Image (cartoon, rainbow, N blue to C red):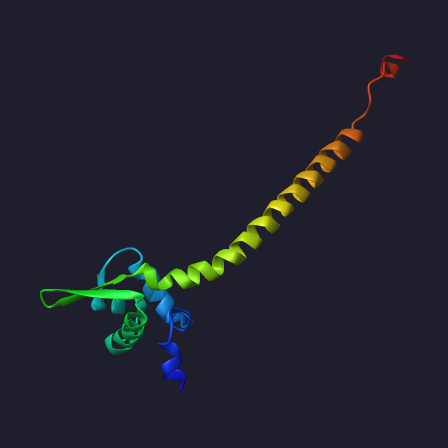
Length: 128
């Protein structure tokens, strides 16, 4: 039951942290399995299993070069995730913009308060 869910779509496939690590590594360009094994510190069968899941949802492509299989990210399968996150990103951007306004107002208040703490020179200092 759980196995079928992981290969159903990109959301389920990237829910597994190791698969996200693999995608991060492949985002830098093509890599053979042995490179992924070395960087991730996992066994070759484990990495291959994760790559198979990513391939089944279309997030990773493979091509053969001689005896080596080179893997790379196929972003088209990740587009539904991007589209879903995009709405949240818009909300976060709006909130950060509002926070920037509040911080600027606080900064201006601090500068104004700091100016009020300075001694005023109105000519009385010369009297003695």
